[in-house]
Length: 329
Image 1 (cartoon, helix red, strand yellow):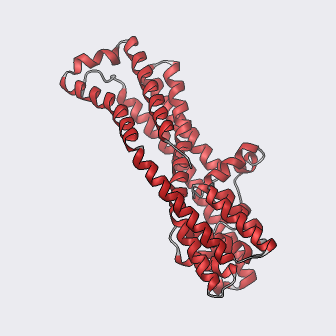
Image 2: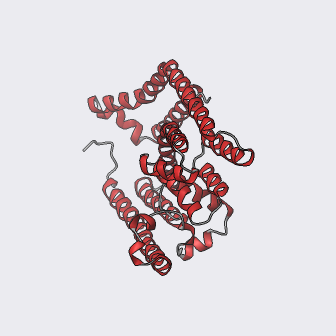
Image 3: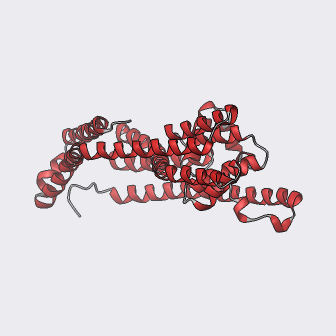
């Protein structure tokens, strides 16, 4: 074991694992019990209306009636806060079947685990506070990462889904039937979103509200254009299949322009990655070759301050480079 590691690193690791796993396990256990209760209530309601043989797991797994599920007391209290509504939308956009209470429990648990470990290692308030803030922000970063990845997959599949919907309308199907065809023939997450639209209007929700719900869940300009075009067509009339073809063509052209921009900015992205990784790799190499030379940074108070300042500046520089090369069209 390297000499610069503190002697109490093992108790800190044990505390982190114990506190973090305990809180996260409790959160997921609560979520599992809530899901079981939700499915049981939905099955009982649907059996009373449609008959037991017609109730399938596919119907139970939809998020159509998600807001009617029995929430915990924590969720009931949190729903009174306006920021929690934005959190619920974010969790839905990331396709996570978490409640705001579960998300907050996980965040607080990770913050407590990291704070306790940092306090054992440093016996200081500043590292403890920074570790707690990192624990609070990590679940939010994870959810936003899932949301971004899911929206990117949806964006790639969207032109093909629009073409499929247009072909279905040309074949003589009604618009709701075309939504069902897209839900059955498209991969995830496209199938989930269009299935939700179809199920919502099937159960009586106005189609306008269902489409606006899609625009809220998928934060893309293309989706808003798609929804607006359909709503206008339903008001004033026109050839819907031709409108969908033009929307799909516009989206594909924008994709082509985005790929060209990525080619032009490839050197800038590579430069950012190299500059971000070089100090870390160089530090690891020096540590492997001469551990005593690098131990000063970890043992002396000034060295710890320099490491923290370097990490902050590296992070800000990486974000700045990404901001420069991130061109939106």
